[in-house]
Image (cartoon, rainbow, N blue to C red):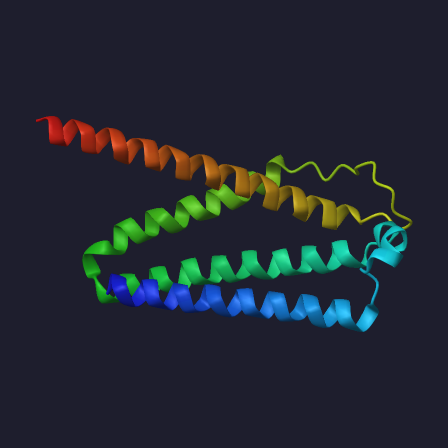
Length: 155
């Protein structure tokens, strides 16, 4: 069952990466805005920022949907994992909620003609806080796994 999930996640990651790459080149090809000759104009607008933020929102939503769907599939296939899956989903909801509550949404000093809205800044701060929390959790899991393996191999 784990190999099937890994394969599904691998395919989803590949598809999302290809969509992002193709979308960037199509967008860039139509506007021609991001050539070296138009660099000052490109930096003064928010269109590239908006596109990147939109793509980041899509990736975060896709990740959240995959977490929930794959957890529910795993839960249906293994009745003993219902409690563990519920705890993982609860942790995910708490992390997202805490990230949103800690997000300030304060404007930043950038050289743009049109400043991002408060909602955009709040969502960006939320995603940054969530990313920081997930990186910290990943590092703690790596350290914990290494220490646990050293302890168990030592006995």
